[in-house]
Length: 214
Image (cartoon, rainbow, N blue to C red; front, side, top):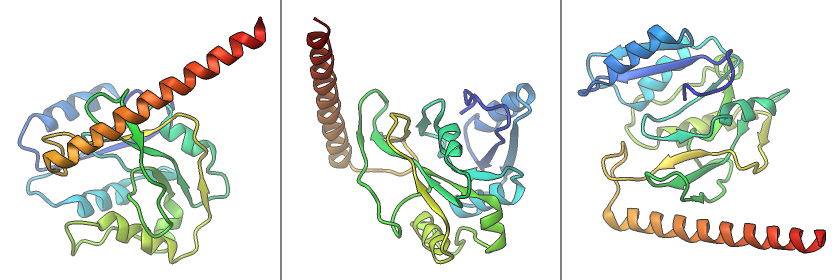
């Protein structure tokens, strides 16, 4: 996240009563990077209150969300912002991955009333004007409910084309959302299969280009 190119980006980190050295590390980074703001909860509040806190303290034009154990390509949020003019929500592309982000598979395309919030940025003015926040009376599917509420207000939405710049949703043991070993094996199997197909297709394209040159 700290490798984002834009100097204008605002990074708000919510430490939701972590029990490791996360807070110490975040505070160290905040001393080195003025873009970073750190908020700490003494007691675990859950994803909704954490995200709402970030929204409330944000000053940027658009707001995006990221979990602590995921990855993004360097230009991910910059790419989404590139398409944001005259839009309230910009949807990027997120992929399922393991610890090795070079091996990944595209997630299914969501309908408007499905989905997470990781792959999108939301215009802050749109959220504030419509009093849109994450529901605090649930501990799961809060992101889907939030998106449903957003779409009730007929936002102007843009779907970013696939430019090979992704949000990597990491599936592994010890991640925030615990998954069964069977589920993790299936994710890895799909990721390896798609990665092999991409390499095979890329090789065909390169061979075809070489033949045209000769």
